[in-house]
Length: 208
Image (cartoon, rainbow, N blue to C red):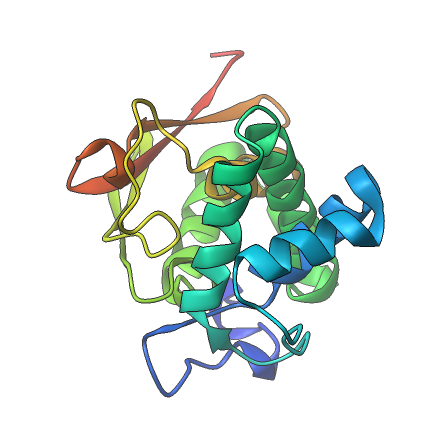
């Protein structure tokens, strides 16, 4: 059963590149509500100029999504990394539970780490627009694993002294820890917000 051909129908590529998966919003809103109740979530939506919560299915405009993530970083600089990480972790858990067929999940967990990682990377590459939007995703190196999102829309136009893509890093780390090996760790080595050409995420195994 090829991993990249058994994903659900609503993972079909969108008509326009400037769209992203709705979990980039919904999982963050859930984290914000848990952190500060509906008022905090509503406050962030207002700062982002989002007055209607997008539907949970289908692809959505990436621009208000980016504004929401950026509003969180501006308004809550101290807690934004933790909240974005929690949202990324929840996004990965949703993908595993709702978007990857159960037999494929079992297969990945049964395979040795190297072939499982290769299969997971293949699937991620095929469906990269769900988290990269109009950014350009590619696998820089399959072993050791290094991936990148050039022109990452979630941080487009931002300026930071250090890497800020905690949501993306958490998505990758959680997927690899749950589906490939529990000792995987992800870290962002370069970031568009720091003036780099692409946001690069390295995945390594702490036990090796």
